[in-house]
Amino acid sequence: MFVVILTYGADLAEIDDALQDHIAWLDQQYADGAFIASGRRVPRVGGVILARNVSREELERRLASDPFCQRGLAEYAVTEFVPSRTAKGFEHLLP
Picture 1 (tube, one colour):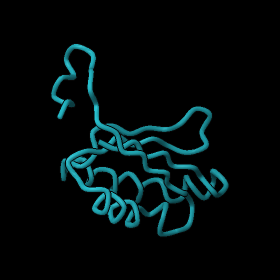
Picture 2 (cartoon, rainbow, N blue to C red):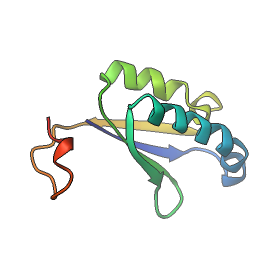
Picture 3 (cartoon, rainbow, N blue to C red):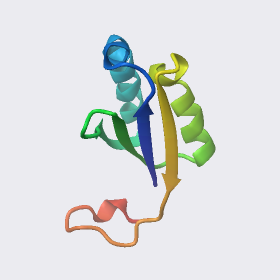
């Protein structure tokens, strides 16, 4: 499983201009089963993505296809981890 931290490198007006394309890209990642959660950071300086069922190389390829990345609007920090415990109802996240 991976935690991806996006950090915006552009004004929010530029982020908002690319947002619909980014959302379409997110929709495809969910449809492919690669992403399990995503959302804005607070304050709005970037986002967070939880990903699984992909290799790090595949995840990096997917991130490179994000319109935010292609337009130079965000940077990505990827952390891999192996869940060892979950809250009740989230056991399916365990390896």
